[in-house]
Image (cartoon, rainbow, N blue to C red; front, side):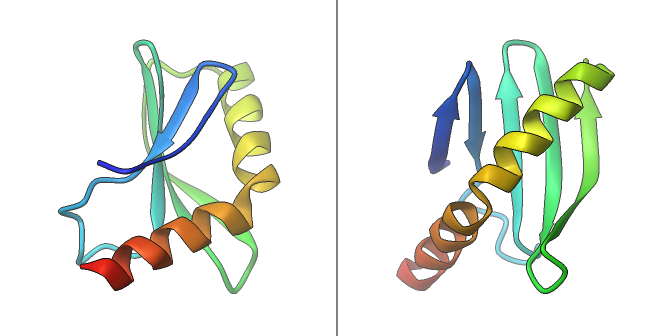
Length: 83
């Protein structure tokens, strides 16, 4: 479960055993958790799953993801190459 980034209490990561899924990122802070598809060609994200999240949480995590979009994509690609 490679961690890509820890920022403001949020841990952004992906699971090593999700090979068949498109690029995505899991985000967790305490009991809050969500998962976003990373739409590289559109430079966008799409919510897949959320638990215990409120609107302010989504604003924060979306900003974090977009501020580190290229780093997330690079981390995903590097990890996939090492498998």
